[in-house]
Image (cartoon, rainbow, N blue to C red):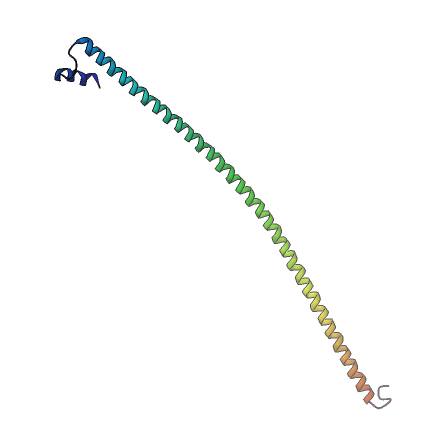
Length: 137
């Protein structure tokens, strides 16, 4: 109870009338106010401690997030290098496959030419044999 309220209580007759009793009452009220003030100070100190812990946690999370961003950027760079390497390998494989197909086509064409030449030779041989002797000389 605050002293101003205590004085009003004396006037209302709620407090003891003797000065010593009033002094004891005010001392007790002062002790109670100090206790409440100390409780408030303790709670305030606890709040400051919690705020400091929160700030520390936020700073740590910021550092961790920054490290993770750096790690992700490094991994993206590595991934891009691997992708570029794979793109080069794919281009080389496509080129090799195209060369192989060209070789197969050329081989097939040579085979067809050989077969056509054999047919022409066979037809020429048949035609020569059908001609009378001495015509080709």
